[in-house]
Amino acid sequence: MGSSSLLPLRSDLGGVSIAMAADVAETTQIERPPRGREEVRVQLSRLLDAHQIIIRRTRKLVIRASELGDDGTNDLLVSEVLRTNELQAWFLSEHLVNVPLVTAENARAGVA
Image (cartoon, rainbow, N blue to C red; front, side, top):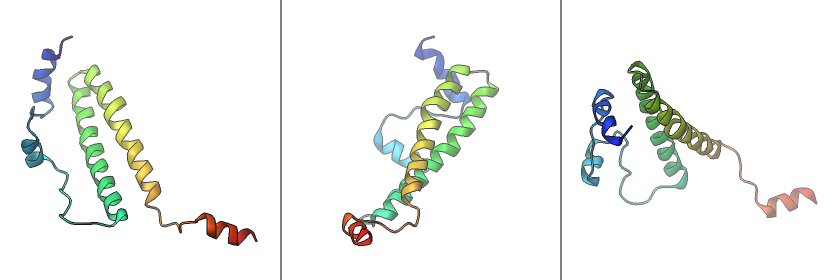
């Protein structure tokens, strides 16, 4: 099955092939970060939100590919896109939990 056989399916899934970065930036659902500086926790929250957007959209595409009987696209979306983004979302959410940081210096003080 060549890559040209996937072209009709892309339109069936609701996708449009976009090649230029400016076009991608105009069509994305992920908000651009503000200019200037942000705290690390804000950056991580923004990144987590982006992964969650990708997860929601991918789940819709998985259902559509399944309805169309396209097992190859379904497998690709689940195994490469969905699982990867779910893992990253889990990893980021674990770092955003409100847990006090422990440094080596604080740990030594507690042991004494």
